[in-house]
Image 1 (cartoon, helix red, strand yellow):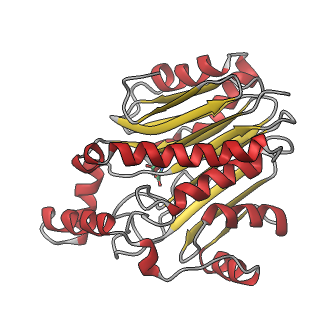
Image 2 (cartoon, rainbow, N blue to C red; image 1 turned 90 degrees about the horizontal axis):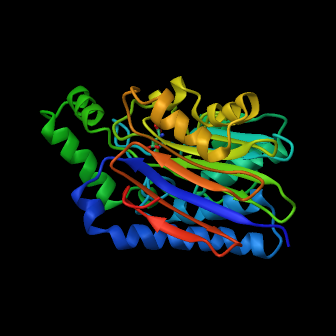
Length: 313
Ligand code: ASP
């Protein structure tokens, strides 16, 4: 059997009291998503199926900032985004500013497979989701107590003005995101990313997570990558494709490329950044410059790893 592998992340960013108190639950969420994606690969499913499945788990888990549990924008609304890419043929799908859709990454995949487009946003995306019968939920489903507390805390600490709250959030750089990369039995790689975006973002703001080449990138020739962190910084540095380009054009190995990008090329870039990546040999790597990144991976060589903090790997 060819090697199979999956890696998932649940967001890179600052540490918090809440995260410290719920470390075990975060690890469990990563484990469940990773196992679900791995099962798909074991049963002969494609890398694309596996990343969608893993991300669906994380979207459904209220601890993570994607799907249920998404961060709230300045108007206390949930606006989500997601992307998915198949390394075999570079087919891609993306969605942004979408409300009510339970699993935005599934919508991104449907856009890829059922439309002539790659990227659809806002009401058009919701209409399409309804047309093809994707599961939609009332807004209350997505808003967790924790997300609402974060929102009201930000408002309070910033003199109850929306502008002040925005500034406060920029300083705290609070965010999250979920993502997965996988290698299947056929030797194909895929990547997927999904997020509620940054807290207190402007309505209509689009971050890196839904952008092909920034939030997600997959190419059998090089690697599959999912990014997380401060979206505005990740967009500037075309994060996911940057890794692939270092491999393709400079001949770097996967680990070397990710390490070089994060700790040399972008060492002075201001903002939290995290990437998970794998290639067709089943090599997996994870790099971040933030206080924490919920992450894990599993391969058919028997390797398994889960962590929240930089202590390991
Ligand atoms: N990159 C996401 C965004 O900016 C947030 C995150 O990954 O933490 O929307």
